[in-house]
Image (cartoon, rainbow, N blue to C red; front, side, top):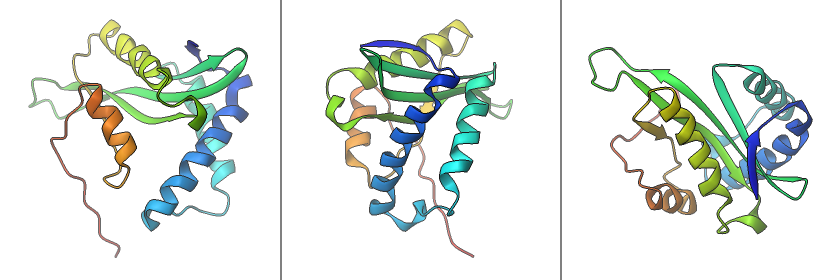
Length: 154
């Protein structure tokens, strides 16, 4: 398995993985229900992230097949905090048959190396409270909860 920066040619593989991940999340909770044109919107979103020099999209490849991806960015917090800039991992997926084989860990390590290279010493992610598999992955990689995000439909 090797990690590299994503390019345009990876777009359909990323979209395919994302669709599987989102079906899984929609089964967990209706908060993840999507618009009818969500695939098209995500394709545009993913391409914009791939092309954005201030963000990173990495893919994990086994042979020539994209088996996972991760989106990362550097974000600003209010200047009152010691860590006023943070690395944020905001979407990650590994194909089911490759889970538990180190692909996610390699993708995460690439993000963290990019953060460190940019002077960032704190990384964050958002994990569904109903996705126990993802929670175990993040906690197993040293991430810990410090907030709970809440919502209310109006």
